[in-house]
Image (cartoon, rainbow, N blue to C red):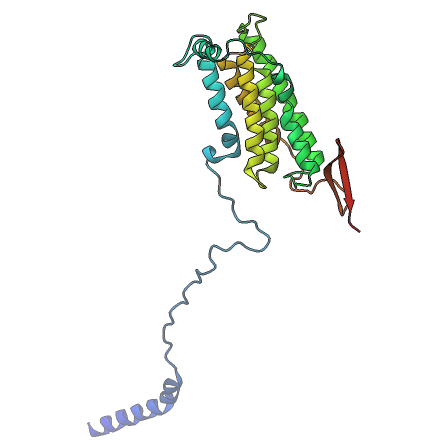
Length: 274
């Protein structure tokens, strides 16, 4: 028995001497926690990729803003044709001619282009417009085509008799549409400088509308809708124009033009700074 135990102890000692150094050299591997993902730049766009553009709600779009006022004016004008509406065209015509029973003038035929004269005068005075002269001319041409075609079409479709019974082309008022179109162009070109340019132009246009009713050429419905058609045509002219905005007026560098008045004669003065 003693011999067996001695041999066993010797065997254990030999095993430990053989494998203990290897066991001692084994380094326990501790589990590592994975590094937290970097979420700081998670939503940054990679180089060369444009950021997503947030869509503007339809009711905040340019088209809605450009058409809401003209739509209100045209709708009101259409609802008060003849004897319709809360305050009909017949009632307005009666009240106007109580105040101006015999007053007649041709001034409305002249004032329709007065806002364009204001536009030219302000440009000649050296006030910087929103757009250069070429773009202004293109917008005016396009707006005039829109206004003339739409007014002519509606006149021939509605066939409303004028207050003076001269014809059946009363609705809407072409004179009023022309005046408000020109006033809208002035307002858009110079409102960044002063709102008074637009106020003056719209005052002239409103005078044209009033004179058309005083002269028994149009009903209340005609002039209100005509104002809507004029403003709408100008706004559509700008919205559909694709030329580059914001360029300076086409004048040589250092040149300014100013209106002059001397000894009863008017003219234009030119100053060229070297």
